[in-house]
Image (cartoon, rainbow, N blue to C red; front, side, top):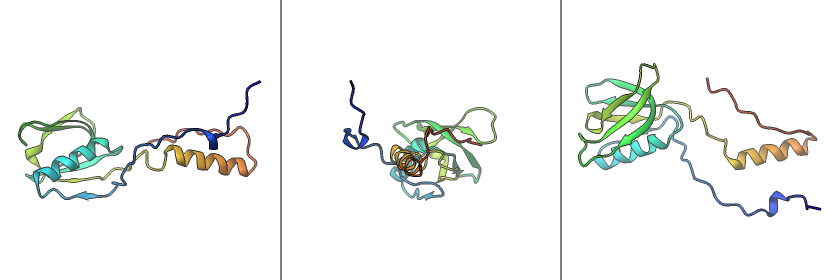
Length: 136
């Protein structure tokens, strides 16, 4: 006969820590700050807005970045919010970066799920399940 699993006794590994970047205007005074901001944009789970040096705004989801030896040789790639296919922008053309889109994964970590589970269980609910929310 197998013993029931007690979640409080399970070994738990710490997960990744995600910064709350939603709404943040990233300061890009130096090349290093821009590179760091674009790395964060790559890890972000929402849209970002790039302000280009010519004043153009490019909003979309960053899915790739290709750092090179120079800013001109480095590019960030994104899916534009308005559609139309992938866009590549050279780091050298970027004047600013803002985390404008909703972080679709904020508050949806394991700890949040467990907390909600135990709240529902304490309220007497049975057949507790979590269903994904709509992303639109």
